[in-house]
Image 1 (spheres, one colour):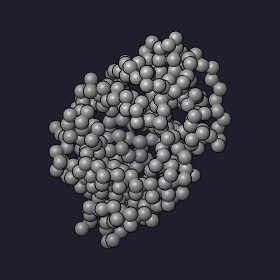
Image 2 (cartoon, one colour):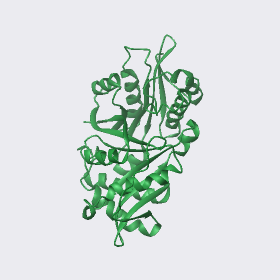
Image 3 (spheres, one colour):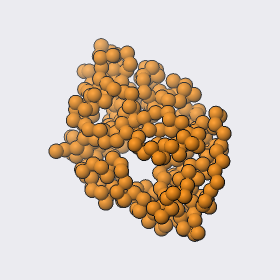
Image 4 (cartoon, helix red, strand yellow):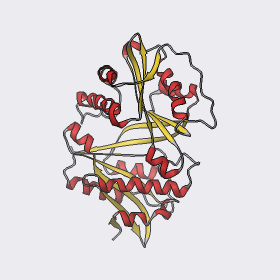
Length: 323
């Protein structure tokens, strides 16, 4: 059969073939050996097998691997939005099969997720993977957002010097109430793929960010950096070290994930201060620090570029939902 459902053992057998695939996880980082990049991609695929209703499909032709894709139920999203939501990914196509666009893989994943009552499915792919993008559009997906990733390389860039207008420190448990309120104010009506999609309730989209910062304070993030003015928290940035990925690839990476600045504190350079102050913390734990935002968030990208961050990649997010 051209489309096969794969278990962990079968997926692991294709480690050497995946090393030659394009657009694998970490593809912008040449410092990561292709074999280790492939090994990490295999681990990301295998995560689907431990997720609710998760599976992995491989597409073969005459014994040749054309592509692989994972599919699963998104537990957090499903519980939060109170509807069954699925996710496809990672999905990778062989560069050797120039005519192969992955449509059959996408359809196999969709059939699997619909079997479990999914009302919504999302998938994220590199902006340069045009064949896969066309397949998603032909399968009924629509573009929800485009994200860009910037990286700060500590071996090539000096730490920036910034004059702060706020006190910067790591968050403590007593900051929780202020941070939850600040996050709600910051992300109410935020321009993102959930607020802009009529399939989702705006209030629930905002609540998702409130839960996110709450979880970051307890288990999700390694630390939360806050900026304080006159005993009031003016902004925050969650800091995460990619522990499992770093161990698998022998390349240390970390990310400034979720950030927010209180409406009353904007225009005071708070975000720039947070992005500069996190770098010494990251340098002790990583070789590269990354940040991600929507492509049209030009103000944030200007701040990153001024501090020494450089654009490394972009990804499109596609949505599908029942009529």
